[in-house]
Image 1 (spheres, rainbow, N blue to C red):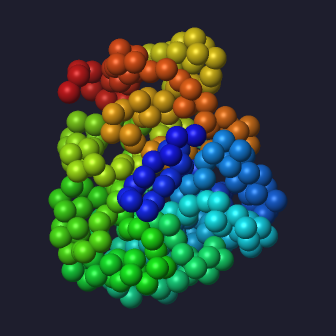
Image 2: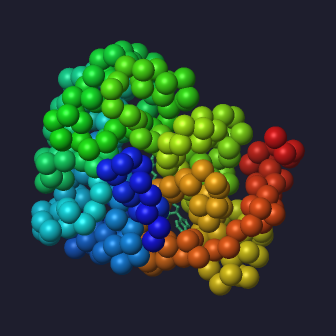
Length: 301
Ligand SMILES: NC(=O)c1ccc[n+]([C@@H]2O[C@H](COP(=O)([O-])OP(=O)(O)OC[C@H]3O[C@@H](n4cnc5c(N)ncnc54)[C@H](OP(=O)(O)O)[C@@H]3O)[C@@H](O)[C@H]2O)c1
């Protein structure tokens, strides 16, 4: 598995395993989650993506069960987590409305709970989960700087930020934001041409792609895109998911896909995507097929 430096001190596996769906699996035992983690490690996937809100604030603790059962694991992996979403349930049952909170108090409290939930004293990377239209960039930026200084968080970044919000937050900070995690796939191609990816490519910051299979919808595509994926998959002896992920990996921006399958057999094959050959014409064959299927309007932007 290829590895990438997001900063001088942060080295992540190119493919990341995401735990958004962890709590929704029919089996959430520590043993079963350990199997998922071990299948990832067998392929060199050492970076795990979490968020305070996943599983309505339960997914970090489920993963924490694995870390508690095997304390040496922590130093073999990198943990990404996120904060800033308040959903009026469980932990925030007293909130009257869903909202974002990027205040210092919320960020600090959320990180403390994440650390406790995952039995660790540091996160490798903390992301602000969504751009907050009520953000005080100076307060949020100082909170992120102070967390980095405290050592509780090694690096900081954002998710779902537009370039202008990224610049605003960065302007209020001393430390560097190291990534933006955004939706990117053959089912969500806007960021390749609307400036979102270009902004980070220009700055040399790593972009992480969430839902690289469109949350699974690419895998049930029966149109031209599904046929193109199947043809390329057959010719390279991999499954169609590997080809869809390879389409993201092939991009010169060195995007990191964040995979979300709960299925053990599929997890075991995530790294097949690294073996797929994808030249420029194959990349455009898939890109234009996604338009033809009505996922996007038919025309190269
Ligand atoms: N930052 C954000 O705002 C944000 C938002 C969403 C997600 N994320 C991150 O991105 C991660 C991935 O998101 P995702 O789960 O939507 O990603 P995904 O990998 O695009 O989709 C996974 C889904 O596709 C299904 N699927 C169907 N066929 C599949 C196949 N052949 N291979 C693999 N999966 C197949 C999986 O079902 P099975 O489980 O049955 O395989 C699963 O439900 C999340 O875990 C989270 O870490 C971040």
